[in-house]
Length: 335
Image (cartoon, rainbow, N blue to C red; front, top):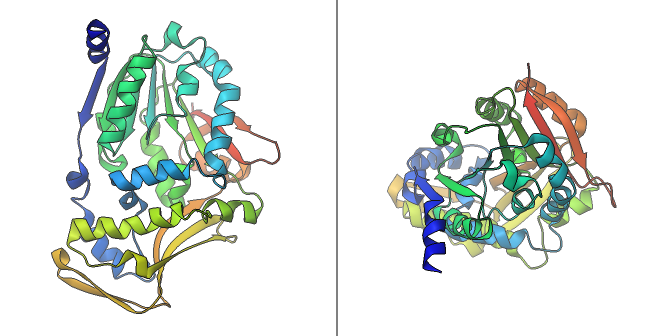
């Protein structure tokens, strides 16, 4: 047993470029700008402290939250053929979380023949460390090189490709970026791709509005707790005095913009002090604090986005039972 543990340790490395405090170097200025904007808004990256990451894992297990199941089922259906066709030597996953869905690819029959390294990239060190330890134990052929960092600053620290590379950006996270941001991000990601490398993007699709809205308004209130957790994060990080329970979770589908919007709305007037910023902010029930948007895509809007990003769509996978719930786009660089 001790030899097996040693062999596993030899195949595991985690590089940390940002911890919770380092991630927040830009937080004071971003929060100041966001809370004085109209409407008030904050970046969704501030959901993902350790508590927020764990709450999101719970969200993915909720009956109303179809995206995780639909994406997992799609990966199950395509993983064997995809891995046999691409035969990547390295998989890089951006926003890896617990790497749960990625096991579909790591378990593909051909994977031990060609796959050498899995690189999970995420902001949560504890979750990546735990998942990485599990993976080197479950997959004796695999080395894991975790990278703890922020998308905006640390993609350059992803280890060099050891051969053909498959980059994963799953979970519909592309929808959390507005159109300008996601094109800029995809252009940055395209720099990770050589001529034979590929990118697999997961995206939620336009569908019946009631189905979309139910996924963000679960009956157990987990998404509401996840939303309010951002205020706990602000209190802890900036010496704030938000009362999170005084804010109502409100989420709806903006059909004109093809996006879910998630807001925190004060139930009564609030004056919140952020001591580290030496500022006070007044909230009224007519205000909202906009915490997230999640764009939904069609194949047409996907193709347009990729063209603007210097990428081309090679294959679009979706599930048709009972509806086109979710999509996976296999993407390559434009020649």
